[in-house]
Length: 400
Image 1 (cartoon, one colour):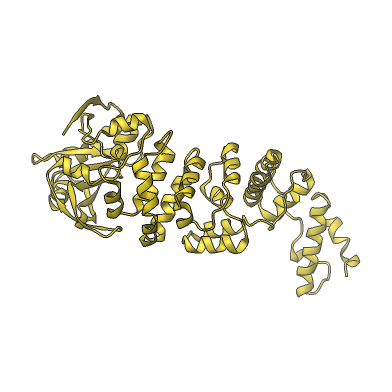
Image 2: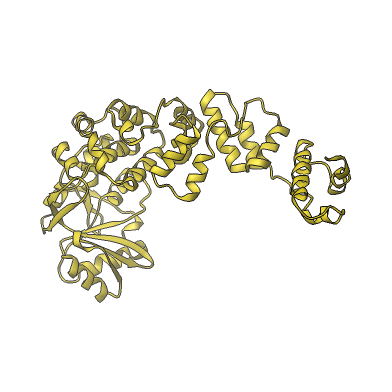
């Protein structure tokens, strides 16, 4: 396999158990190399997070070698050749070299091999088929380094074939362009994604959701999403999507939250956001947050006074208020940074009364206690949180 002449010298090659795992895999004469994202990101000057390893050792041998080195081995996907090694509390995904024998667009039947070039050919993009030895020597069987340097995302071999193997690669093509690409997208890949976007319906919603949220987190995803829309891909996975202008403004503000960006792509009707949250199987917390971003839930005009803004922060909570401020700003383009800043710097005071305070005034227990508290709290907020508890209690007799 072709060496590049490039040598990676970063500390992740040996840190946090990496050296121990690599030594264990080579204990019986086998070869193990770092592969994929860790090599790609190291060469691109980006932070390396997950460290994956490829080896010519069979999965059962990998398990035995790890255990012999007193390392934990978890058979996370052993039928596909993947074992998770744990060293110093850190996981490393170790996968045996393989070729796809049969695919259905979602999963593959694989056969193991000791041919590194064959393993490279089954991967998705050239920049992801990069390997490096424990000493940092880089191998590049499909000219991935050139594409990485040119910021050009390119399928390995026939794009239609790669998509047929796994339809998720359509979304990954756009996601990688948003994060690593620059300039025009690869024409052959784009045409294949356009022609086969209907294949996305065969994917689980969890895989679609994960890819789309990662794409939305890209520093500037608007141009990529615009191309996705023109190719029919965006509508396929996010039929709620509309104009991209609101998202564009959010990006210009420097706001990178994926859920906020997702809401900005829609009409922000409550039923639309509720349906999207359910279809994408968001967590309970994410579902609640997305529903609370609906337009009309709370009006946040640009000329809202500080007192009015504080009242909304009190009733809505600072996080929800900030979401609505940013989405309103993105919708009409009127600067609301002062309102967003207020939500971050101002802490709401605690309402000075409790039910026991009213009972102590001779108000009998029952629904009237709750009604009085709500009325007094509303007055307290409207008056800038200034009346004391004693002052509020003095008003009880004047409230019907």
